[in-house]
Amino acid sequence: MSLSPFKHSFLAAYLVVGAFVGVLVIHPLNLIVIWWEISRNPEITPTLFEFLSARLWLILLPRHLDVAVAYTLVGAIVGLAFGLFSRNYMRTTEAYRSLREEQTVLIPNLMRKGETDRVEFKSSLRWDMKENRVNRGLERVIAKTIAGFFNAEGGNLLVGVDDNGDALGLEKDLSTLKNPDLDAFERTVNDVVSKNLGGDLCPFIHTVFAKIEMKDVAMIIIRPAPRAVYMEEGKASIFYVRSGNSTRQLDVREALSYAKSRWA
Image (cartoon, rainbow, N blue to C red):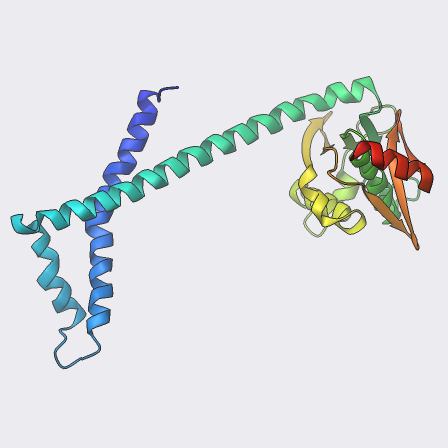
């Protein structure tokens, strides 16, 4: 696919700027390195200012045209490389932003449809709605549900939503965090997964947010795990898997049989 005129201009600008950088920045820096190497004998070595003054203007002379061309090409290549990197970074950022927006739009629809084998609702991450206090035990409930999705085909865990699909919000959960914002909430979710299931699994989840009825709702998107995921409970390793619209614990024989077929 050919580049648009805008993209041509974008890369051309980096080429031109890079060419100037090659002559005006890379060349003087190279001379500084040369001066540093020959400055071991201070009796015969001029000062840095004298050294640069005597050599920088030489690049303007016709007999030194090859030097000017060389530094211009070096700078242009550096500029082009940086331009390509910047363009690809902007494309990736835009694609990621668009994907998050698409995922965020899904949240109201999932709330309306209710819990399924791929969707579950949780009222909070760590705030006990009944006792009106922080309850860290709820984090393990979240971890158990995520483990079930990991071991199955993945899914979406909506936090700040009651069993009927109504938005409760994240206000109580956020108030328990050192920095009460959504970024801190996402980091806390990653911490819960890392602590209870394994840090290697954090890349397989990400969290998006939506405003529903003026309340923040989180959706933890869980991809299938590349390995069997267990939760440590006391001295036992418990295997959970998603079954229908709930998370079920398998006994040892069932877990081994399931893992053999799932990750064979």
